[in-house]
Image 1 (spheres, rainbow, N blue to C red):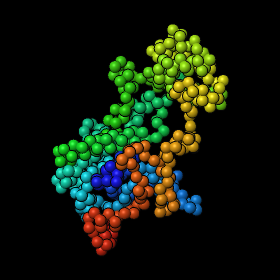
Image 2 (cartoon, rainbow, N blue to C red):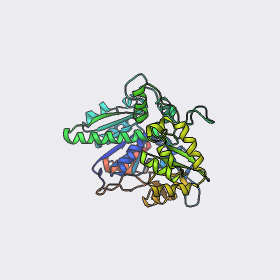
Image 3 (cartoon, rainbow, N blue to C red):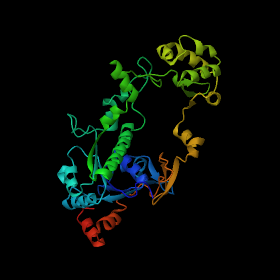
Image 4 (tube, helix red, strand yellow):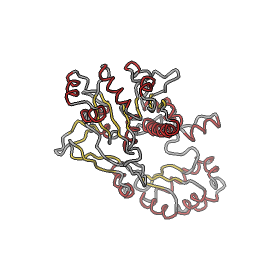
Length: 406
């Protein structure tokens, strides 16, 4: 039994931030009911190619994007623009512990599915709203997407090549990181609300905003600005507070060197055949190396090109200096550590035989993550959920289908 197997989650969200939170809860054992639009479903079902392929190599209807954030859930199709659909969702919410939604501010109030309406029928409900800008403020009613928030929230001002270099300019992160982080923070907030409910007995409303999360996750860079009043600039792959901590060229490619303290720098200098660097008054401490970055980095680059990436990684690892290659995803999934940790898994799938998944990173000794079900087909569990949770008969379900509610 998973750690959260006693909980039921009603997932009204789509795309990534909300579904990511729902998938984490589902991996931990919660029963997660994903409510989708009849005939269309989650937007990401159509966000392909690529699509999952069947045994004959043909595309199925399941987009890889959708498959990344929806395992262990049950899919129920309900049109809650119709009164009967609204009533079904209310009844499901009355029997749920958690609700996740990412509609625009006030968007669900028109259907009687907002927090105040549902709290009246289920005071213990934990209701998590995820929006671009939150429930308050001058931007509250604006739509917000990850890429846009990476720009507005400052991340892209820090990401990309430095000004003056070829290709300089703002660059977004290669995955929808703001959405992912918002899903993670939402999960933390939900678990905190559950802990409070265990003591107080009542539910609450959680107001999560992509912008808030993005600003919070600027971490040291935000503090670099707040303590100095100077906005950090783009440094490419370099670190604003540590040197050397970036990529360097090798005889056959590039590698990453992450020197975290002065002792590691001394060991690196010895492996590089330049032990004098560790005692150089320009480079002896991290503070000095940051101040004299422009002098040190070219010297290191001149030294690293004489060994291959594998040679650097092997020799520096033996010396206790953190470093590593720059893998593409094919190389990453072939890495022996990734394979030893079982980070690529397969789950049975009705259309393809099996579907690949990236394993959860959560390792619990007593209540481990379980992979019970593949990301569901659209409406795959409609009859099952409505019968088991709400007690509807096959005739009731057929009648609702005839009315276009399901």
